[in-house]
Length: 150
Figure 1 (cartoon, rainbow, N blue to C red):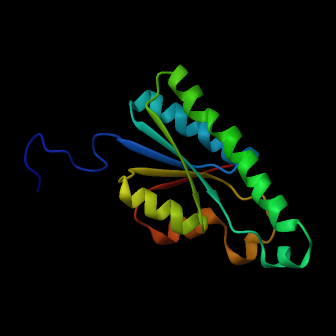
Figure 2: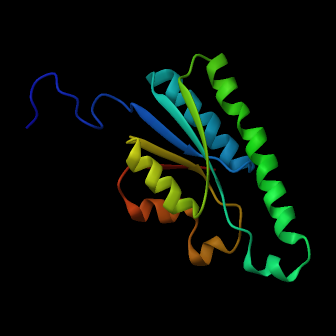
């Protein structure tokens, strides 16, 4: 039992909402949905872009690794505008860009904040039906509510 007036996670609305963004249409819809939640709930919004390592096959194709790095940098530059747009709407927002495994990095940041909710876009890749999408893997971690936006 908690003491009267003490904050209890999940009872006073989310203080921090984390949204994973990668530039895909579903992740941008998740960001818009998260921004609306943050605005209505007066929560802090933390948008996170996780640049993944270039596929191992990229080493077989000359210049492929640099193309992957350049593409990630371009997406990152576009997503940085999310913070400015959120500020225009009166939303306390933060943008983070990290490298690594999306599930590991989103989980680490969600724990570090700590986040009260995690939002991601649904995967558009057919292979994820077999091996599991980022959203499914985050749900399996199971430390915060996860919302998957189609």
